[in-house]
Amino acid sequence: MRHAFALAVVCLMSAGCTAGPDHMRPPAPALRALDEGKFLRAGVIVSAAPVARWWQGLGDAELARLIELGLREAPAIAAAEARLRQARAGLAASRAGQMPALGTSLLYAHAALPDGALGGSNGGSNGQIDLFNAGFDANWELDLWGGKRRETERANAEADAAGARLADAHVALSAEIARTYVALRARQASQRLLAEKLGFERRQTAIARQRLAAGAAPRQAAEAASAVEARGEAELARSAADLAVLGDGLAVLTGQAPGALDDMAAGDVPLPPAVVAIGDPAAMLARRPDIRTAERQLTAASSRIGIERAKRFPTVSFMGLIGIGGSKPGDLFDTANLSTIALPRLSWSFLDFGRGAAAVRGAEAARDAALADYRARVLAGLQDAEAALARFGAARLALASAGSAAGHAREIARLDGLRARAGTLAPAAALQSEAQALDARLAEVSARGELTAAYVALAKALGLGWEQAAA
Image (cartoon, rainbow, N blue to C red; front, side, top):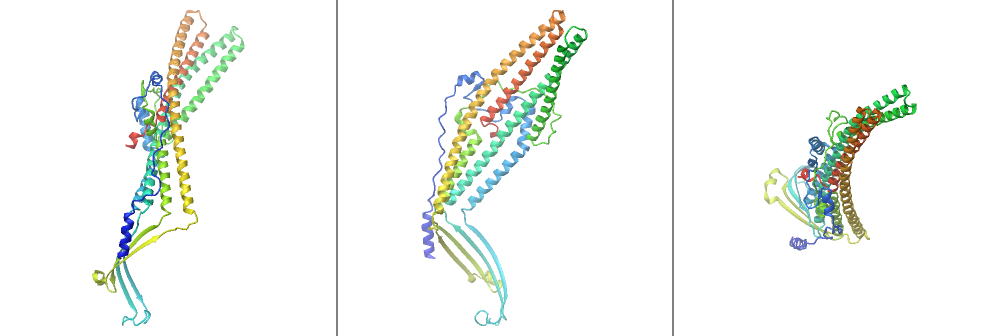
């Protein structure tokens, strides 16, 4: 017992060793300085921090309701939450693995043996033997080289990565719901304008046929007007199909059955706020959950190196037993029948023909792959943000131009209407101006939808939409 105690003391004194490299977050690549003046002109400010619940900036209560519903009911979110609980359970199990394992047992045995089976007389017991025993046992493997600590470190990184994946699911889902909602609203607005435009085209066809019947116009003019009307009817039918598809897609994204949103009232395309805050790029790297996931996966890969290195060293474990009992039930309460056993054990696979070294090299290669993946995620995130900013600024300018063009077209249609009523312009020409004005309004609706979609893409590129949900 004295030797076992001395060995335990030596092992505990040396238990501060931890195999493997300590993880250090790799440096971010050098960031190109942003032209803050350019973004200010586009309605974007770099210095102010962005808002996590970015969809509230659109001022659309129905959109906010649908996003909150999706974040609460969507199967993708439920699956990510379940994986997070699984990773946290694994972390708890890893932490518990560093502690001793304790157990207890209660035993009763009865045997009927022939006389002399135990090497002599059974002492008048007629071969009947009873055994009562109660005991406790403990097992503990000392973490001399930090393998278990590295395992806990790995499990902690995996749990963090699962949390980041949940945040990424929030970001992706909120952006996809908003994108689909904006497309639906833009299609609803286009549907109304297309129906109005088809009315003008039908009136133009009627005028052309009247002129053909009166001999004032050739047959080609009437056929051309009919062709334009047919194309308008086809476009209106395609638009109605797109509306149904978008509505069903929006319902599924929010965790509902297709058709659940068929009775949703029509509305206008929401517009982003006049000023959009994006924060600085360095903060974006810490905020994007996909980059956070890659960084924590790199930590887990680095921890595996320590786990594999620790396996190459000797392991020391202890097993202890405490039991009390005898041949009568009363012996369970007699301390004179107490027995104790301590079993220290040393094991070492020192000759494994290179298996341990190969496992370490494999873990190091996995760490290098995780590092390359992290760098790729960072660069892709920066590229995504730059592209989203550029598209958002261009979409603002495009909407301004489309609005100006629509205003000019409306004024032209108004003037041509006055001329037609005064008899100085043919009614068909005035209707053509009205149709062109509707085309300009359709382009304005499209530009409005593209601007809001660019705002949604910018929020996703900045990694917004998860802080509030995570809290």
